[in-house]
Length: 451
Ligand code: GDP
Ligand code: MG
Image (cartoon, rainbow, N blue to C red; front, top):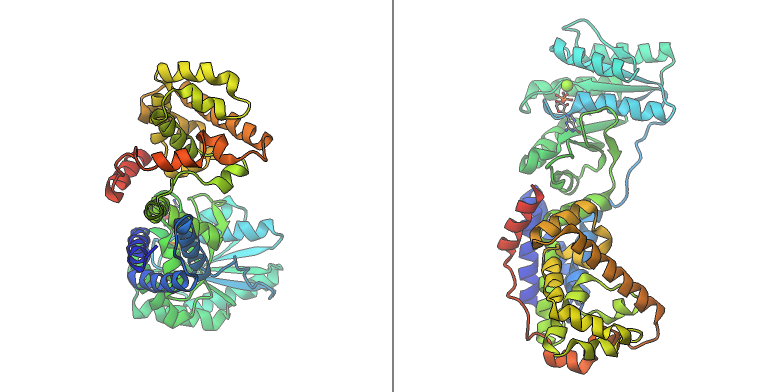
């Protein structure tokens, strides 16, 4: 891959990041870093270069996200967690989730309604607390937040509770009154953990929100609520990479048990999957390989291990089509001589063309990893190829059988296993490739499929 190819690839990745709601300054910093890594790791050459570039992006994302999941510091008795965030971000819901989470770990939590002005807020927390069997502390309307905080902690001590979770008030926009209130609440309660709750769908605004709160309360971590549905997770990168606040939990639904520990590598994957980056890997790879004149679809190392993919099968099908009488090819495959007649019949009946249509209806990830092919996916593929579900099932089964066969006959030259040897493949490579979809076309097609 040349420097120009690399930059084209990086531009593609940047678009994918911004599409996934990563704030642009954060995306730019990441790209710069990936570029340096790619250059220092001498990411040039052909085979596997796309995958390696993706691996570099993935590890840069993971590292920016904090590397590993962080444990909260709750050693104090009672330990105190202050939740902060804009109105509607998910603070109250998250307060109940955390209470339930830590109750299951053996803690005895107290939920505190620390919004001195909105009775509805305290009411909501009281309901959520009751639903998960956690006591809720409330004070009369108008009690200053510092006072609410102090009294709540005293109450926790009196009741023998060892975890105080403060649900603070929020505004639709950050204003000085709110920040002053949060400063007072912090001073009065000295919470070791100050967790910023963010709506994962906040998008590009997440950075501004995080920075706004950071100045007043120095959050020790962030919780990304509403990371279910359409949210793309880029906000996690934005807060971690842009504001330096590590994400510690994610909210994945409205119910009180819809809370998960944050795993940087998983979110990195999710962010990468949202873009067309797997396609990018293939594109980069094919470009690199085209220059070398080899066939992009055949990875002999992999096949040697018996990890035959639909990409390989597709390559094989296309080769067979150009190699003349199918029987000759099949006869070269050890143990398959007896199947030659059968294969010829299959070719004559158009079965190979149908198999090709089915494979072409798979996403690149599915072609690489047949294990992904759940029933739902198979149904979608059948629909896309205009074939019956059973036909898709048969093809998947056939691939599995071929994999098994190859594992059994290890030690055999894999190029012979494929379809008649490297020389033949070299001669025919590239001569029968379909025009490649553009990124835009592919994206549109996938978006359509996701619905
Ligand atoms: P607050 O104003 O910050 O206290 O926000 P709330 O806790 O009242 O949440 C606002 C809305 O978001 C409510 O309708 C919640 O049910 C919803 N919500 C909170 N967390 C999640 C989540 O993780 N997933 C989904 N789907 N909805 C959530
Ligand atoms: Mg609330």
